[in-house]
Image (cartoon, rainbow, N blue to C red):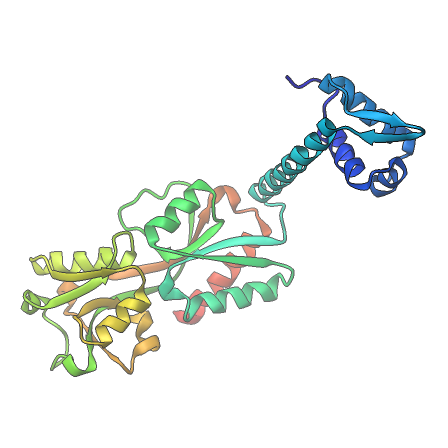
Length: 302
């Protein structure tokens, strides 16, 4: 059981002593006196309740028990440092890093612009980008595993405690290969009941919109394959393996290989793309910079 004699500071002293093998070098490294180092090690030995050192002449030598304790304590101190860093981040005091989640389909345009703009506002900021489905990213946001997300706003999920900064709205289009492009203008989706369709796996916003459009059309689509990312899906559509419903924002990626045809208004499904973060983190200066950039992009896109 821990007692007042065993502290993280004393374990840090032990780690330094085992590494340097010298009271003097440990004192220099930690900017303490040799006497303070000796007292800390002796106090730790008392607190642990077993011999950790032996004297060899005027030198202090670490016993195997001390070496083991130092090795284990090094991992412990590292864990504590990470915990404290995350705690500061939760309180909005970590000014060097932010974890941003995004859907794959946004990485070709809006995300690079947002990252570049935020870096201009805060040059020292490191931005870690996490890609995934709408469902996965929303879960990570609520669990505190990422700090902010740029996704389609879930239409039916409760968003209590979530701050939303709108970016733009995007409609779904019928996506076909150039060799199978439809004739005419807007698509009557009810005429495509027996067509082969491809879509993303469950959890993606585009998948939810895909099935909603067919619900409006009054039938279940003939889905022959589900894939894990939108880039693979577009390649398969361009290869004429089937049609799909894709958001207009990806047109710039493969517009030369895929035909995007609008749906009739009665089948229209619109995604609201937004920056989202926990209201508890709204005082975080990194979040504020990200939100400011999102508002500027919203004004540009609208």
